[in-house]
Image (tube, rainbow, N blue to C red; front, side):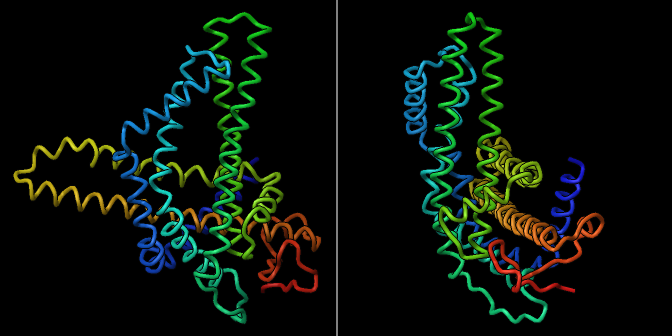
Length: 339
């Protein structure tokens, strides 16, 4: 566990260093490409019609009651409300997530592959954004179906658990609360592992131009024994995004400070400038998430190559023997050591 935490810390430090080293590029092209997606995500949470969210919430509540979930459980009420909000926001952001979001990530992946993953002599031709976009699009669609399947599987597990334990143990508020807490934990673990696999699959599709289910399967294989590292890497970025979403809600949606502005023109200017700044901050976290995913993939790749070459002990821990042209399913003759 300590070694995995150390690896996660090294990857975060390397990602931040790369982001700062190429600050001018990452804060211009990828960030501005991700800006419409960031604005759609932040605005969808505030501007999504309440009627659509309420309709989805009622449908989910009816589905839970038909499945036999206890109607008095606060866990399922909160879960259904959050799912309804997420589904409504996702529907409104689909056009932006399939275009601007993927183009921003493709731009970041192309830059990292050209500058950090190629040979020192730059013998490989530079990658273009369009060549990465299409495998990434196919993987993104596959990831969406995987997330939907994971949610359905989690609900099936909770449905079986609640119905089995209800038959065996007497129903009581304490037992219901305990079972709801266990259900929330199981649901969170399933969804978190699926999300980190989807993120790694997106990186694999960009680095190896292998989109669709093959990238997802390869990501699931590479994730074995490294789930805690992936979760440790995803936590800071997701916390940063959640903090920016909360800042947008507090400063823009609630906006109690607007009453102190003297004229409507000054209020509009303040709201517009702060909205663009917050959306731009969210875009930079989207780019940083792509950088962290790339270096996590690189660490897994180098670790597997080092093990294949028999590097153990201090050599493996220090990362000696990196092979930039290696692929997981490649031949041993294609490996070349980077000095």
